[in-house]
Length: 394
Ligand SMILES: *Cc1c(COP(=O)(O)O)cnc(C)c1O
Image 1 (cartoon, rainbow, N blue to C red):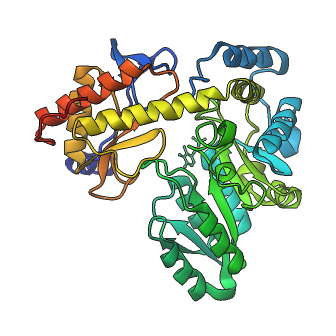
Image 2: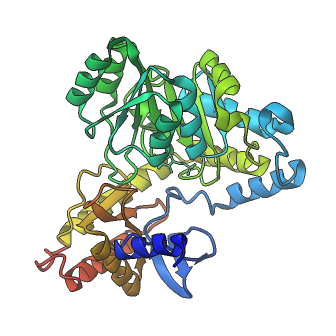
């Protein structure tokens, strides 16, 4: 057996083998999967902007006007009007001096952390931070202190140990797999007192929480205070790409030092134009954000009525905890048979033994979709022997 086959076999044995499923059509509240129509409860298209007419048209028009691709890195020849316009718009939206586009959130996190911290310094990272933050820490060659989830005491202890070497505290704003919020005021206070910067990843917060969807930093009243804010264009904003907001000088440093910015082709003009159109929709219809969070509440309550506790979620990301990988994937398949697609999440995305279905509400779901989805998952969980009790009245 080849080493590749062996490695795949090992993943299968541990219940960690992953495969791609094919969705037909756009990321709507329902999708066709393997020829069947099912409710979609695992897309990050939180506001329905990926399939919104105005956003699709803006992408198409920009492709016709500017071409399909940017042709080069921004520093070579790929810097175009749609990039500049979107950066100005994002900076204003987030309340920062400047914004800089990256190819994706993954590239932004890996590039920014490595540009801001280096050998001999210490980066402080929440244990449940996204993999792209973990990889950014590794690339930086700084020492990484992983503090217990949202545990400011543990972080304070680490900062004291690091002394002068403390460089950067980095956290998800809304945690991607649990839907809870980082304690931003305390994190900022600690970072300040120890001479470190605070960086917040708003991947699941932009368009989803805060006034007009401005994110968790804005919700905490800390726009312009948190040193670095990262966000993706690929989730609530319905497009592709990412951005970093900071003061102008720090952004200048990123232009000069962030390798994932320097050595990667600029995002296609169509992706920038789509994100711009998404921001237009968001500013014209801030009630989309309220609908999203109202839907998240309906989903959490409906799951609770099925005996499925949604953990610490306070947002549109709602986990159904199972534990082991195989039981989680069995529940995912059973739920799919009943008509709801909610992806099972396993290590290394989440810690060993904390596998779950990760449900996401969208503003475009109808109340009855969410109640039905929770019920189907409840029935599936009882069939799988994961929940004993009959549901309480919904
Ligand atoms: C999705 C995600 C990213 C990566 O963003 P992409 O634009 O999809 O590469 C980064 N951070 C968090 C917390 C995420 O959930």
